[in-house]
Length: 340
Image 1 (tube, one colour):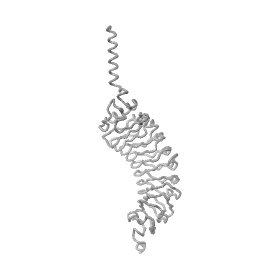
Image 2: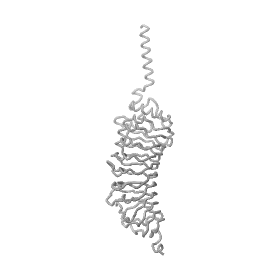
Image 3: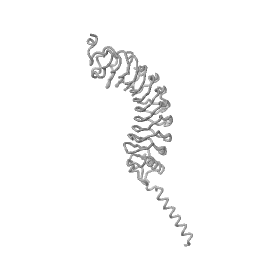
Image 4: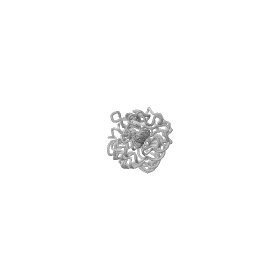
């Protein structure tokens, strides 16, 4: 064998060896799709290789890695759920390189900062997006409405600021929307009274949302609507519709709402009502006795008159009723005592 041929064969061997060391073999990856493997390794690198991802060992089957799940039929990554670890940095743009993700979770990671990357819009199969209990900040991006298969969106317990994107109502499959415990300002979008598909449970509490509640929200039969601890003003009676059959929970507490409770007609399905710490006046309507209430709080308002005697009202203690202008009757003091 001549020298030139030997040199050529040796060069090819070195090329093969270097390729084998750098690129994972299909056998080494097992079920793991090579492009998913590459995306996950980039994610780990962007998050500073935390010990939380110690199982993410190079050239091993990513379908067996911690906090990752693969679809058993396609072997594509369909879930990435990171929580309660030493993870820091920003959400890597490479999460958008996992095109078959259905669930993406970054939760209880207080050292995760920055904003939501736009690359997330590439996740056309995404159903659950849960980015909560982190330190994400900035405005909630308008591009989230491109995630048309979302059924659950949770951005709670963060530092998001600015106004709520009105186009979130375009998410026709949404079953729950959690924007609570942020620093959101502005008003509730009028479009939230016109969700294009399913009606989500709506959680907007613990923000700085101001202005009146759009009347259009009264046309929506929310199962849960929590607008508590904001700066809302005006008339909220439009949320109470006797023809609503799904409404289970209404929480309007700790706002600056002002309306006559006497004229309110409650939906029969209502089981949890908190309107405390507002400026609500009038009396408690008699039809409240027909409700199967599990929670009731009307305290710290300007209510007057006798508490209706019946239903479940007397099963609640005085903390549910106290600090009203002239409300009386069990479990508060009798009305004769108030008038004396």
